[in-house]
Image 1: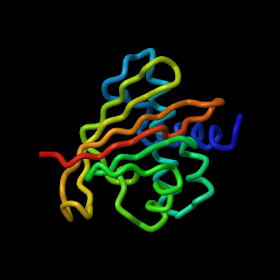
Image 2: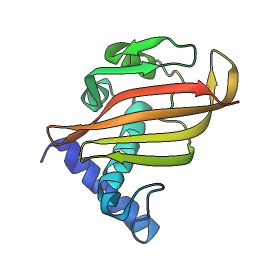
Image 3: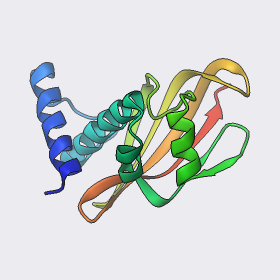
Image 4: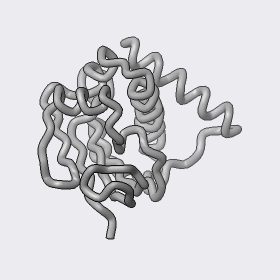
Length: 152
């Protein structure tokens, strides 16, 4: 089991203890709950890596060919996205989220959508809708793609 997978498992256990049991992820069938909880733990690990400005961890968390499309339509590759996160730019990966929904596609892909309020260059402060595609490669979750758009 990789270091990242061990950390994700530990986070799942910690979250379940704090919550008094594992909660049902929104929009996910019972059969896919375990996978959704892995991604929830992965999301928490990502937030912590961003808060610590841990570039090494972030490079492991993003797929080599990952892309992010920002609210103005600009596309960032992996290194540009990580540089933005390390610079402290507000990010959907670490913003408080509402209206979370998990969509499971097979055993290796989960699309998470949500709504957040974050400061952005395009409109300074505002609600945004976003999606992040999580893919499982070689036993570990990674961020494959993400997109943000202003919520109207």
